[in-house]
Length: 366
Ligand code: AMP
Ligand code: MG
Image 1 (cartoon, rainbow, N blue to C red):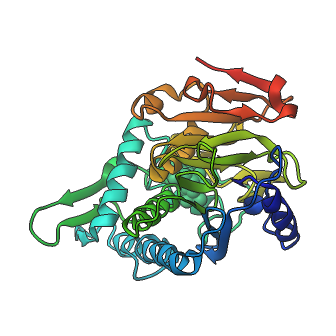
Image 2 (cartoon, helix red, strand yellow):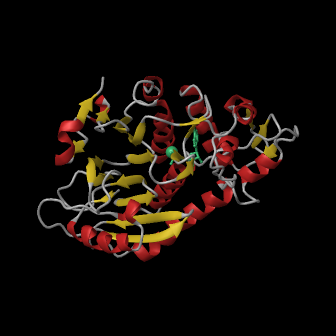
Image 3 (cartoon, rainbow, N blue to C red):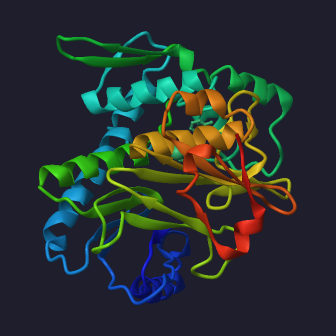
């Protein structure tokens, strides 16, 4: 996904040749439009972008501020960095020793646990042992489906209710403990959204009023990139088309809104000849089924990120409890059916504009 303009299309087309198609594709919009200025850089094994309005000159000053926010979040929340809060918590699982963590870590974890509760465990920040079992997160890529016993044993380690988060007025202020040895936290479904919110707040503190932050499709915008626009118009990538500029449709981010997409097409392993997406349903230990992607519009990037992962697991029919807990959030689902359908929730009426090729596939759900 990207904000849309003619020049963005041209520059994106070049970058796609360098293999960054998933993130950087642009799109044509009616009439000539000057492009916003954009910085792109690698972070967290993916690509980050900061876009500022046409003619902005402060990109060199602001980009390091955003990059600094992303690095700080990665240092604290990375699953792999030994010194991160998450790695330290995981090493003490089942020991009875609570691990002191930064206030920010406690905040993300608290929000992850709320979404876990709202979603009946479809979103679960303790999903890591299942990720390993299916060959992600440093697990062995099995090539065969996990045996019944292995699945049962692993499922016993995945339970957000066995996470204790204690927040106190006195130091250390926040401490976390996982009840059973072998349990592990994995905030991969929420951390990028949190990082984008951190960058958003930092840019506001700098007095910046028009910008778009994008971390691997987790986006949050402020203001509009050019006069006469309502906000940042974002193309939702069509994962069934390989060429650049193929969109399911567009959504315009108005002040402070955020967008995130979870999909089965970017990260996966192949097990018994079948693609297994990197989102697992913790309720049965199986890879989430039924959808190709889900895009969520929300009031913050953390909310969009967590909800897109949760809704990818829950599917269209089980979404209500989660969406009710997050008023104003809406979703565009691309179903894994033949032919695929675009199912859109009512909150996005008048907001989601399907691309011409997708108009007849749209179904507004109640
Ligand atoms: P996203 O791309 O935001 O949907 O996040 C996918 C990442 O979330 C995966 O790479 C895992 O780290 C993590 N994850 C996978 N399944 C779940 C789940 N059911 N609940 C919470 N996090 C998950
Ligand atoms: Mg997510």
